[in-house]
Image (cartoon, rainbow, N blue to C red):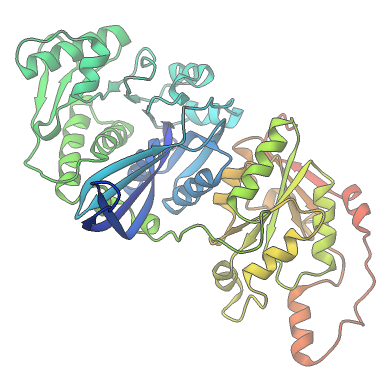
Length: 498
């Protein structure tokens, strides 16, 4: 593969709520579900990306993400799956699908998030990503990403094989796609196939009509447990039967499309890719469906870190601040760290960072994250107190607490215009060494470094306290907080930086 596999489309937040029903509601004749467990996962294009990454591919997901807690949750889940998120701004709320289940059977599905929002403009990095991909899967769920003019132009121009998984409410595939993968009802709806004849004859007519209309090289109509019918050359289709399989079919179409895309990326023929996809989708259903196929790191993602620190702490608070500033055309600034034993050096960095834009969001390592980075004796101050102290500072607009070792998931969702690091990078390390640089490049952000105040160190403070020494012997600050801005070293992570 010459580049990553790119999945492009609409991502939803799916939640499976398992429970027991032992009684009816007293005020209406409906069952009462007593929840026993719940699992969040990326849905739509996000699920297809997770499946591709779980099969060992390097996967990048181009999708639209809202500035809300659901968007933050998606960022965390995708990072746990090893998927690189290239997020477009999304007006409105993150779409969610909640399935209430009893003994593996769906009792009710609750959709929320409202009408589809309008996806924002892709960055130059996104357009380069599509051009350099080894294969592209368009996973359309009818919410606007697949219809974005700039993305469609990039898809039409790429030399990579393109697989198009359509939706009845979505746009037509771009001309020349290698493979379109509608299911039977989608194909019949999209092709406006009149009733009559056998099932296979109707599927064949639908596939041929779509292949001509979309100028597609091939169309594979998936037929559930019966396999898939491939129209790819001449008038005689290829029928690929499926081995017997029973179980939850949720996500089987995404599994089919992602498997076919990976096969094409490896150089397989379309017929070989469809045969592999049918076998994999059947094994997926027989093996227990999405509940069994979801990678362990995604299943293990803890719920959003919640603290009692007020309305300036958490994903919801951070999302509201960022959305408000972006709507006004302002600049979003973010920084991160453990901030254990908040001291003057921290405050200087935060004050300098806030002066660079119109809001400052602090990405704060949770207690579990700090312990993983610095050892079991840290942090000294728990995350709730650390978050409240930061939120109380006038230069901090919101605090987002994250559990991972790095803030990649938080940054992929927040998409700050400027990421600030405090330290000695300005004196020889070079901002190009920052691990966040590659992430900021996805949307054309900047990395910015401001110097520490000399002599300020949490580790030294802890050591001094344990040794019974005070801090009166610390050297005076060599950099005034206001002067820190003037000493800022800016390294752009993308050409044409703002």
